[in-house]
Image (cartoon, rainbow, N blue to C red):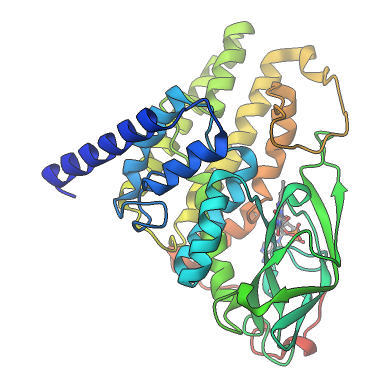
Length: 395
Ligand SMILES: Cc1cc2nc3c(=O)[nH]c(=O)nc-3n(C[C@H](O)[C@H](O)[C@H](O)COP(=O)(O)OP(=O)(O)OC[C@H]3O[C@@H](n4cnc5c(N)ncnc54)[C@H](O)[C@@H]3O)c2cc1C
């Protein structure tokens, strides 16, 4: 955008923000306030008008977020990440108009939480090998299978489900993408406890669970392409955050340093601060170039850098804390729910960030993607790529 277009867009955003705040109480009902935000096109500013946006470049969302962060507690929460970061771009790219009208608004307001039913006990990195089956029965699909590591399934209304609809096709081709009602008969959710003591994620068993064909996203057999839209957006949602300078996880390290300064580790703190700032500036540049739609494979770079950096940051924080670092005081079994505060204890964060290099695709898989699809290096051997899925060897 040129300067004049930029200024016009900023003026439009400011005018809408003024209206939002004048006509809706920022401390009143959460769903009412966020619904009004959506209706004014201030939910995702790069989405089309009528679907929570104004058709403007994504980087202008900062202007909205900064102002709303300062005046209201009605902001997206941890639970909304899967819907906002992945479900919304998937619907935008592949949903019908009816699906967009039905699902986007309650997802934005948090009235309906979304989860992601991709990973299975035998299919994580090799997602295309998944075994959950969906068989057509008139206007419905009958689903049988098991998913695992399903974040926030215990409070979700909708699950983004990839299931195998044609086992005779090669593994990437026989998949279809659905939205499953997480409270439907035949859907059973069991908590899985993490290293932090909490159960953010779950196992999900589907036994003859039914999905109306109206909740199929995209065409039959197009599940892999839509799963890729989901994963590319997931990687940007995890690794593409642009915090203010010095904020985010590096702020935790600086805080710990203030309370436990150790001159022997000063250089290490500085090195990580510079790495965090470099990652932030790279993300800022990527955000300016980003357009609505499916992000490219370069989104994997941010995810990889963020995951590895976070682990180093909290490892150093614990080194600075010395013996205090071992005093993790509770392994209470908690299933996070809306309205409950998540602990900000550095020791908990140290444990939680171990997952950063696994969730959304492992760091090894990010390196494979960057090697093959960004740098153009030779691909891994994939011997089962053209075989019918039913004839492949599976874990
Ligand atoms: C906190 C958290 C939340 C999650 N939330 C969700 C969720 O909501 N929904 C969901 O569907 N999934 C979720 N996951 C699952 C996550 O996507 C998978 O754990 C991840 O993709 C890895 O799959 P896997 O665990 O089966 O490991 P595997 O694929 O079995 O990998 C095991 C090891 O082998 C390595 N490896 C595998 N293949 C290759 C290869 N080709 N080259 C080099 N190394 C390789 C991996 O890097 C890893 O170190 C979550 C995971 C975590 C930790």
